[in-house]
Image (cartoon, rainbow, N blue to C red):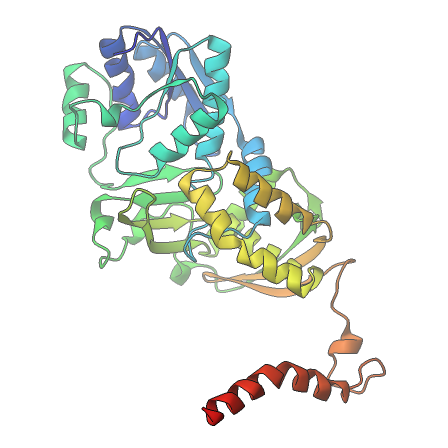
Amino acid sequence: MAKIKKIVVAYSGGLDTSVIPQWLMETYGCEVIAFAADLGQEDDFAALRRKARGLGMRKVYVDDLKEEFVKDFIFPLLRANAVYEGSYLLGTAIARPLIAKRQIEIARAEKADAVCHGATGKGNDQVRFELTYLALNPKITIIAPWRLWHLNSRNSLIAYAREHNIPLQVTPEKPYSMDRNLFHLSFEGGILEDPWQEPREDMFILTTSPEKAPSKPAYLNITYRQGNPVALDNKKLSPAKLLARLNKLAGTHGIGRVDVVENRYVGMKSRGVYETPGGTILHKAHRALESITLDREVMHLKDSLITRYAELVYYGYWFAPEREILQLTIDETQKNVTGTVRLKLYKGNCTVVGRKSPQSLYHPDYATFEEDAVYDQKLAEGFIQLNALRLKINTLMRKKR
């Protein structure tokens, strides 16, 4: 085992990362520094800091990264309309590269030899963390306890914690794993491992049940500038504050719940239940504004990149050159995506009911079913004949054979 002098651990205060610092100090006999990222999960960070110090960590970083998270990670994702396997808006996946990036920055400042995460050897997060670590510091040592230690279950972690007097807040009434940030809240494992079983209503935190949502719809306007939302109902807001406000509005109306079985990068299928209230609104609004501001072929080309872009984010390649090249291409398409979208929120549904833009390519004179002076309908016959030519030849050749 390599000699390690100092480790920066990604710390959340949950079961895994409560046990990891003690195990690291026992195993490596070195200093452990805690790093917790405030991504809008609404944790008690003062209590988290106290707990980390109580676990023997003399230095604890708690960094507010909410604005950076939304501006530099979520908004580029939304400009790409990225959705993994048709449903998942990538709320957990997009948070990992930012956490790992900051971890590497702290390791550099502290002259640490290694970084550590609490992701298991079965999931996607281990890949996301470590690809980022190595992309930003190819020489860093990575410690992944779940791939090294003898603790192989939740119960064994609890037993280890009790043996070492590590305080825990274990809640058997919530038998599933949760991950929260300003973009979403995910639930996995436990009772959700049966894909036939419906999630319990008391599980949800960010969204009201659509059945219990208000009977009166709410309307809102989102203003965009070059692909990014900048104002809500004509009030300018910072990226994080705008998303937080949309989370409350959408959550009240039961918007943003998704129940999927997805394909993990490591090979297995996994069931996830997600709440992405504000993100769902922004995704729909952005697509609506693109519908009137993007050229048809540019839009179709951009749409063809969605699957690849979403895979890169899901797999953990945020800092890979191919993702950066895709982002440059996507962002080039966003120069005219400026305008306002009007939406109606009602009992789990988010409906686009209006869109306008000073860069709009929609012209009523061309689209109207009424009389116009700009479009000669006779020209359509030649257009159709030319486009049908290969079909006609194909049919004639088949008959000849």
